Length: 237
Ligand code: NAD
Image (cartoon, rainbow, N blue to C red):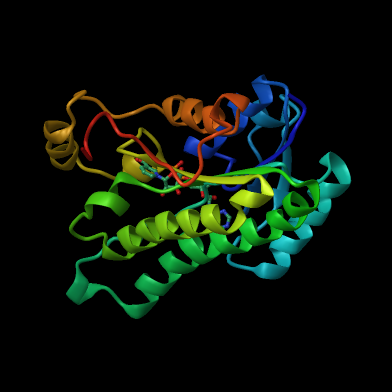
């Protein structure tokens, strides 16, 4: 398709699968990489890694400048970067709460706002925000994470109403439990407990999330905005 696509947190896990899927479809893909070396499997596909911590507005600005120089203005943005800092409420510090919000929700605000500069000028754009089934259902020990992920839904729906007339769509994908570094920390007991509640009786694969994201950025999804699509094996229904 040859579009300029940015996937935040695209250096591993779900983000890397999303970056791979767009690159395989012929798009010009950039990923943010907070630290370390970008994975060779992505750079060998021509994916452009840009250094960027999305909690830092200046780094976001620099990253966009680099992408615009090399690929042109971002036409498809996938706000995927996210963190967890799980803790029961009475043990959760204010920093545990605000740092998760700052990355997952305000981080999305920073990258979406900057992308919209070019999208408004182009009079088109596609934004996909990666939320979580936890943002819709809640989960003990994840009040900070759930609040940030639920926040993305209100954020996307407000922007859908605000910018629909400008031909920019905002959709949310809400993954269930997916095999990745984020879920690798779960113990056997926790995994069994999750699987007991998932109708499809398995964790998801990052590629299954990527397929839905690509659909939402495709022409087939041209009349979809403000949608929240669970890709969760039925967990959240
Ligand atoms: P992961 O921990 O493997 O990857 C997270 C990515 O975000 C990494 O690339 C990391 O570097 C990046 N990131 C974190 N903070 C950043 C910052 N400040 N600036 C730039 N990049 C930053 O996790 P994952 O499982 O691949 O998760 C990807 C997204 O999917 C996250 O938003 C997560 O909340 C969401 N999600 C994951 C699951 C799951 O089961 N794995 C379920 C639901 C939602």
